[in-house]
Image (cartoon, rainbow, N blue to C red):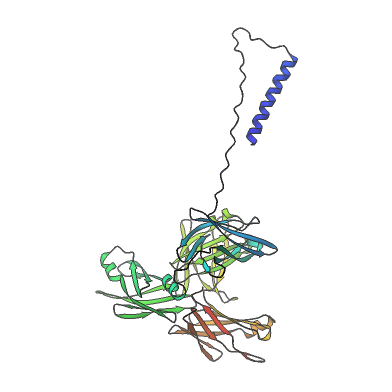
Length: 455
């Protein structure tokens, strides 16, 4: 439009000059050998056709208040299987992809983070929770929902769904280095596969057989021997060690299954950049940075892998042409897993991301309300973190360290000279410990619970 206006003004200016000349002077006749002037009419520039807006095939919607601002969040789904998250109020949008799984619901990858919907039979809608992070403006959790009155859930849930999603991965360091994967089938059998192309190694490593899953323990029979997984609450994963039997000897190999969790932090000196490290079950991870500018998010996001070394996570993040290792530790203040992460560039951006894959929590109403969190700080040590709603001075007074071990899949806790053994609910997939807290007015008995299948 600016170009058209400029052209018209130029044409009007020329016309005005010609008009003034014709009014003030007689018309000039061409002399001999002079070519008469020809008036040239400017060609108008065509008006560009606006790009039509793509109409979503469906929209998840939800609302959340962050600070003093209300955000009506929309997740738009398009025909090409992409999505756009629109928080509104000038907040940066995020893009991603989606898959509709028949009989189960929707699966999303938004900004590198994975989500799954659950079908709410009461409201007849697909729903999932999304944490909206707006840097210095704060953050809040919004429930996004899509009405679908004709949907029928046919995919198994609960224990059966948890087992179906389980995937143990590991590496055998013999005859070279070979990746292994253990998955479970609905008919009670398992499969161990490998990516190796060496025929004799493939024949040695690939197995099938029967398995069971009881009290949060996977048991598999390999070459006539039963092996059981051990749940590691400190790292929030299962470890399964078995022996590969070959003609040249036996080789132990450990496979691990991590259902997934997230560590979170904020780089305060960069305007409140939010960092999320998403840990996935397939041995990969994703360092997701959220800013108020969508273009910056993709620039600083990083992919990587993880492994367990000496009972700690080692995250290997790809940064340009380099791979940088970051090792987990326990944060002294929160008693949670922490990773000191950094991005190198013109300036180094540092951030400590904190979280925990397993916390057993409970609450009592006595003394104005007390919250109990059982946090695991090593392979044998834990910490009972007590938060009083009424008196913060009580917190440090009653916090105390403890020890634990895993026996037949159960958590055996020893605290202040007493031993507590957890139970595992096969229906809800939850650990529960009934703990005794001795206060000035007597003993309280909070139930500390962690839902394995829900996290």
